[in-house]
Length: 266
Image (tube, rainbow, N blue to C red; front, side):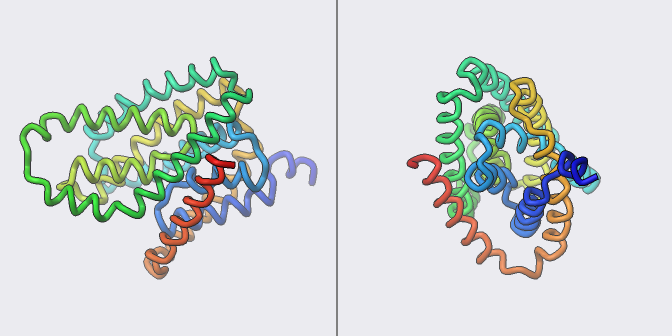
C-alpha cells in the first residue's frame, strides 16, 4: 500500500502545495509565481517539468474558480475572448519554439529559467505599482482614440501573456489583472479578476496539454500538488479578511524579487 501511495503522491510536495495554496487564498497572487520556482529551486525539478506540470495544475484549479465567478456574474466574456484571441495562438507558437529548441535541452532550459526570472520580477513590479497604475488610469481623460484601440491592445496583452505563461507558467494572474485594470478602469475589480481567471483556463489548458505532448508533465507531481493545494486555497480564502494583506504582499514581493534575480543571474 505504501508503494502505491508513494506512486500517487509525494507528501513533501503535497505539504508545499498546501503552503502555496494557503498563500494564494490569502493574497490572490497566482500559484505559478510561487509554485514553479519552489519546484525548481527547492525540489530540483527541471524548469520545463515544473512549468508544464504547473500549467495543467493551474488549468484544473482555475476551472473551479472560473465556474464560481461565472455563477456570480463576474466575467466579461467579451474581454475574456479578446485575451484568448491573442494568448491561445501565442501559446501554440511558443510551444513550437520550445519543441524546436528541444524542451529538455540546455538552450530551452536556459530560456525557461531566464523568462521565469523576468516573469517573477514583472509580477513583483505589478504588485508594487498596481495602485499607482490604477490611479493613472482613472485620471486618464476619456479618449475616443484610446477606446477605439482598446480591443486591439487587449488582444496584444493576451499574446504577450500567452507566450510568457507558456514558457514560465507565470503571468496570467498578477500581470493580467494589472493590464486589464489599466485598459478598463471603469470595470469593477471583481469582473476584472473573474475575466482574467476565465481567460487563464483555456490558456493554461492549451499550454499544459502542449507541454504534455512535449513530455514535460509529471503526473505524480501534479496529483501531489492538487492534494495539498486545494484545501490550502480554501482555507486561505476563508481567513483572507483576517490577515494583514499589506504585510503579506510585502513579503511576497521580497521573495519574488530575490528568486527572480537568482534565476536570471545565477
